[in-house]
Amino acid sequence: MGRPPCCSENNDLKKGPWTPEEDEVLKGYIQKHGHDSWHALPKRAGLNRCGKSCRLRWINYLNPDIKRGKFSEEEENLIINLHSNLGNK
Image 1 (cartoon, one colour):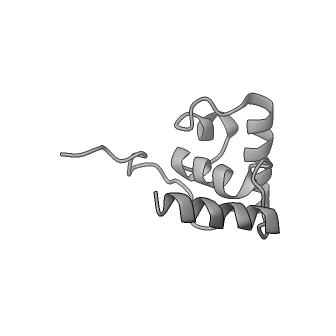
Image 2 (cartoon, helix red, strand yellow; image 1 turned 30 degrees about the horizontal axis):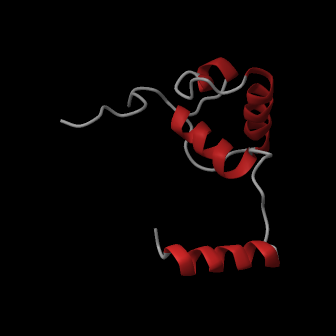
Image 3 (tube, one colour; image 1 turned 45 degrees about the vertical axis):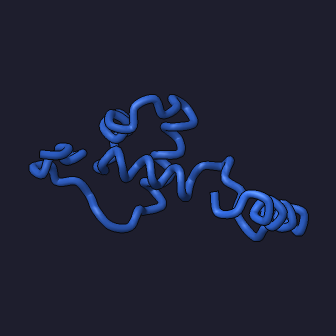
């Protein structure tokens, strides 16, 4: 029962930390072709990684649209105001 694994156990997929070279391959591929199918992306890009691993790497670390760093004072006040009005919704 349940879902099948995202990657077959027979493949020798690389696990562990990403190398800077892998990061560049992933960034270059997504910037050129986009990311319509995360499942097919590693094979198309020439990466020996799982599609889920590529998706998480892009979303959490490589996406240039992600704002990093501390919240501005305005953002912090907005969060506090919304939390006081809405609670933990």
